[in-house]
Image (cartoon, rainbow, N blue to C red; front, side, top):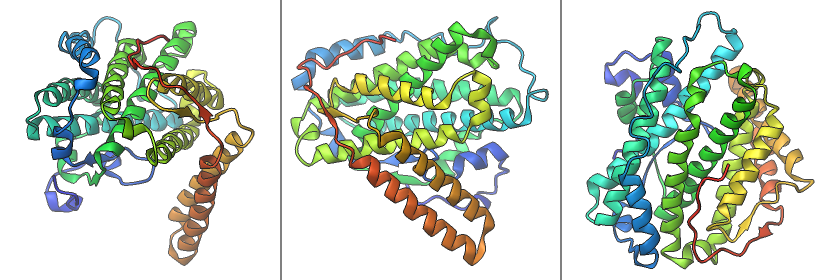
Length: 360
């Protein structure tokens, strides 16, 4: 994979606004990843063979084979009549989600293509299949509004970020598990308050999030194949990725006030609930959780949020003043992240058997 994307104008393709949104490279936007595929191909799942075979048998059975199809439950959507602020934020949510799902599809498909290890190739064939369905289903929702993302174009225009395999494990494990927690929390909320379900796609979230859960289980098992991945200096990396994933979610969600208001959800409550679920799940493999109830937690999150708002305003301002504004806001964001990172963790005893089942 090429680590540098071509300029949009060099491709000669017409690009709509949502595709441009998906190709943007910012700290908050989903990225495409590449890694050392040879190292991943050398993984030996012998230490977790029993759980591995059970998980892959479940994935092979394809429990969601017929799920991602519109049916009578798919209500008509009045995109033009939707509040403009809500419409913009909902489109941003769908584009971001579609890009994240497709990013996983691209990475997993490349692992399957390059690999020779039958265990690893089988896993990533199922995972790329699932992520392709997810991305395609979200894109169908965008297509109804006439603004589908050109997914084929993304593979050429999106930059690829290199991550070492262990960083892929940490980041993707958290991405899949926090995806489960996000989807099921929204689903359960709308199950109790259907008057806030302003789009039919939310009806599909329960089964959908179970795909995310299974994918996270696979990465938990991969990390259990080598005790070094969750010990020693790697504990600091785990804490870094936990802090980065949680803070990114906080900042991104707090930029979508109209979206969460329409759902009838308090953003602080929702994010803390998702963090709580994800932290509880992550005890299956991580030796600690973040202290999200620390008195330093929310104030540092709010400073992080304010720093990103400041960076965005400075970018729009442009010029020398804008440059200094971005530098100042970036320094405030780094200080907020450091404050979050230095909160003492909550120790956890990892169970011998990491396998979990969806419980929410």
